[in-house]
Amino acid sequence: MEELLNQWLWKEYYWLPAGRSWKDIGDDAVGTWRPLPRDLFLTLPLALGFIAVRFVFERAVALPLSRALGVCDRVRARAAPDPKLEAFYLQKKNHFSQGDVLSLEKHCGLTVRQIHNWLRLRRNQDKPSNTKKFCEATWRFVFYLIAFAAGLASLIDTPWFWNHRECWRGHPRQPVTEAQYWYYLLELSFYWSLLFCVSVDVKRKDFKEQIVHHIATIFLISFSYCGNYVRVGTIVMLVHDSSDFLLESAKMFNYAGWRKTCDSLFVLFAVVFLVTRLIIFPCRVIYSTIVESQDFFDPFPGYYLFNSVLLLLQALHIFWAYLILRMVYKFVFLGKVERDERSDEESEVEEEEDGGGVEEESCYDQRKDLLNSKPASLANNCVLNNLTHQRRNINSRLPKAR
Image (cartoon, rainbow, N blue to C red; front, side, top):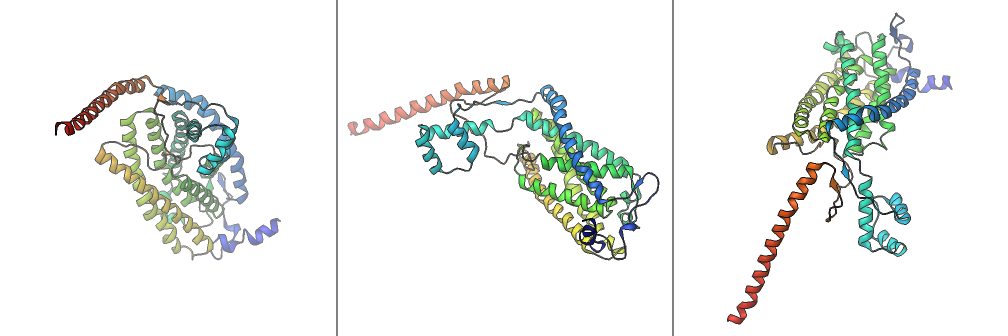
């Protein structure tokens, strides 16, 4: 099996420039690593470790922090227990037709309206709370912040951080330091953990784009490690981490209701994102991988594959930049950021509320505002009703007067 893999999968023609072999990769100097594909198997248990650490972190750190910052959850009315409706909901979720509801009506003894109300209440029960979203954002914020600080500390003294041409000098015989080795493996393990947890995390507006992003990132990190593109790979990861922790911090304060802090952090995130993803990444990093690298070796299959994945990431950056610019437009002309257009908007339908007050805010101030608004609403309705009755009386008297 190993011989077959070496002959087909690890063929030097696909992975390395012409005239280079696997023996040219790495260095045996003290404190350095030689990138080997088998190192990537270590990322799977590390990903499971990240999931375990996240489970503990969200309950021991993020949850108390959410209470300290005043994160409020909606108190949702629960649907009455009904085994038949529960089985129907678990099977169909939101993908059911009117014919399915009519068929269910015969078996449950309920009206169509009652079934729709029950399904609405049951669907609202599954909507994630602000506390859950806050805990997820806090976990990602902590990781991205630590990863960015550690990556910057390990790269700021390297020559290829300032001059990207140094990423290709001597390739592929480039030693990998211990810091770069763990930076790579931990970043890859974290994205594996995000991909494993995508089914239980909050499903957002750009759910499909996030899946594509995670898969492309995992493939890019794995491929660049096997081909010893570690120098340029660390720069790519640093560019991405530079804005992600700002976004997660803005989400945290958004769920806590700190609007001014959230808006300020979002504007800062938008500036950093647009500069790093639309200027630095394409004009410096991708330009170096496509153009400057050819000064050191001729294009080969791995060269085209590596740059294709980078261009796919850049296409996702453009998509997210469009959503961010929409938010900037709302902030400039409306004076506030109403919601996170990039990835914080849930992909499911908006939460419906019952006319009789099925759901109400758990915070006292929000309940107070709701109660204060009801007398005014009732007064308006009374005024409208009086005007309507007076108009009808006048119209009924006109024929008699004539």
